Structures are given as structure tokens and as C-alpha cells.
Length: 245
Image 1 (cartoon, rainbow, N blue to C red):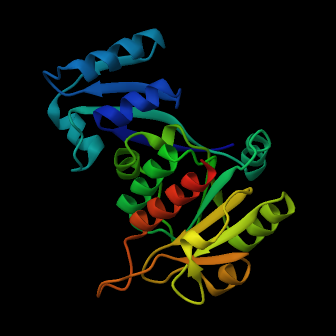
Image 2: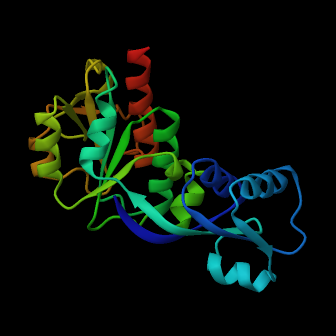
Image 3: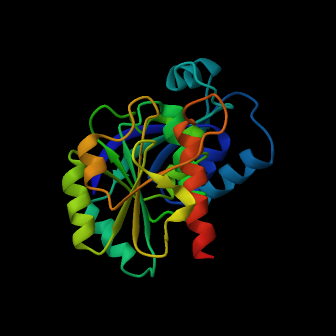
């Protein structure tokens, strides 16, 4: 497991991180923060012996760097990235595990939105590329509504090698692209599966597409040529979920 310093901002993301034992070492509240969620955070922190304190508004602002923080910031000792082997071990207990591979998703809000949907759709692991990709930072944490604390996330430097390893472990690989692809509802998803998506500007790489077992598309009936990648991810993930019952 590879580790990295990080922070979490926002009430719900902090609460979800607390519940998932994400490695919070300190929580800071802005002046006069009240409400049910704040009380729940304090209660959960006390149970887990995590210290918290009220600090001046300026200190919260210095941590959040201008982002919307809802008066709360949590410091993480580390952000956990899992090895691919750890994710595959988890998948062995599932009949039809589902992994998500995100190739060069560069927008932090898109990444956070995809991770939020992935957690809701029961994805077993997320693989993100190390290079030309958004960092898993406080914006991603907040946009994901705390989903990053519940997902096994792996970073890869080579998508092709990752695909090869997944195929050796019985996975079928489906890539989302508009070129030379079939309707996303026409594929049978009832098998161990890895779904690959990339940013809407460039799409998945040529070599990545060549390594896929299936290439799928979402039909575009209007004048816009592509969907936001986080929307496309949700549509396909829930079609997979629908087919699997």
C-alpha cells in the first residue's frame, strides 16, 4: 500500500472518512460550527480518540485554499493507494467483480464525480493513471462526497500492462469510445469486468483500445458529440449493474 499526505474538506466527506477509518489525525472546525452532522463528527472522533479543535476562520481558509469547506477540515496522515494484487484478492470473493480504469482523467471535479458514482454502483476497485491525471486531492475528496475513503484505488504507470494482468486473472475489458464501437447495452456484462474511460477530449488511447475485448458507445442523438466523462461513466456502470440484477 502506497501512502501520500492529504486533507479532506467539507462535512459529509469528513464524516465518511471518519466512518471508514481513513487515517484522520486531526479535525479543525471554524468558529461557531453547529448542526447534526457536526455533532456526529465530534461523536465519531471521540469514539476513535481523534483530536479536534475550533480554530480561527483564517486557519480553515489556509488549509482549504479558497475551496468551499463548510467550516471543517480534516488532516490525513496518509492517503492509501492499494496494489493491484490487493484489489485482485478482494475480487476473488465476487462472482462478477467490477473494476474501473480511468485513463488520464485530468479534471478533479470529473474524477470526484466518477468516484462517487463508482462507490454507489458497487465498484470493487478503481485504477487511475499516474501521469497526466488529476491528483486525488481535497477537491476530489469533496466532490466524491467521501467515496474515496470507501474505495480501493490503485495508481498505474502502464495501462497496457495492467490490462494484461487483469486478463490473466479472468477479466474481460470494455472500453468506452465513439470510434469503431457497439451500443453499450449490447454487451453481456455478466462476467468479471474492467471498464475503461478517458477524458472526453482525447478518448482512450489507441493501444488501450486495441487491448480491449469490447468497445462500446452511448448513442448521441443531439448535436453535442460527446457526454461529460462522469455522466458517461454513470450510464455504463448502471447498465452493468442493471444486467447483473
